Amino acid sequence: MLETNQGSVLSVENPGVGAPADAGPLIVGIGGTVRSGSSTERAVRAVLAASASAGARTLLLGADALQLPLYAPGESLRTPAARRLVEAVALADGLVIGTPAYHGGVSGLVKNALDYLEDLREDARPYLHGRAVGCVVTARGAQAASTLAGLRSVVHALRGWPTPLGVAINTESVTLASDDSAGDSTGDPHLTAQLATVGRQVVEFARMRTPVG
Image (cartoon, rainbow, N blue to C red):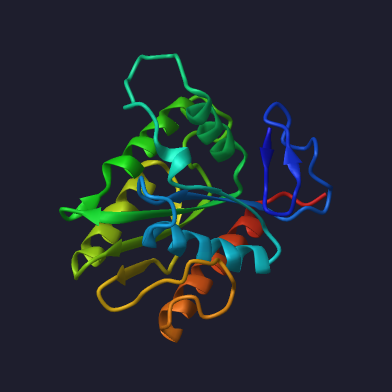
């Protein structure tokens, strides 16, 4: 069972159970570092806050949720945390993925979590098929931009649709607040607006692809 920010409990066996008929789309955030409350996790929270303000249910899988065993192809045993990650993505109408840039690329922690989506290869919606994905990267310096391009390529490989806007954050220039309020959480109005736009875009595209009635 998965609990969202609005208190709705979703049944893994049946996505319709526990969610009211008029419930908003479910947007799942994946990202952070091994340290809870990292800049990356805070950026994902800011995007999810904007998604929630746009009427979505949101679920964050941050530091603790992403500390998974190294993905091993062919290994069928899964920890509870790994099952929760895969189940959440299977239910998601849209996603937000955030990563720090390590040595010019996506962090091993986030990449390992995304590797577990191979478990969805036989799903009705394999991998990230048909879902909008907001991409956010943090880094000390200019490498955030090149890593953002790499993250968008990973989303494409997983059959997802990166939102038109992705955000690369130079943490040498801005500091993200520790809360996930929809206000100016970065001290930089332009960056705050960018994160909010990504959150709204994920919801807009999710609503476009959700069947009505």
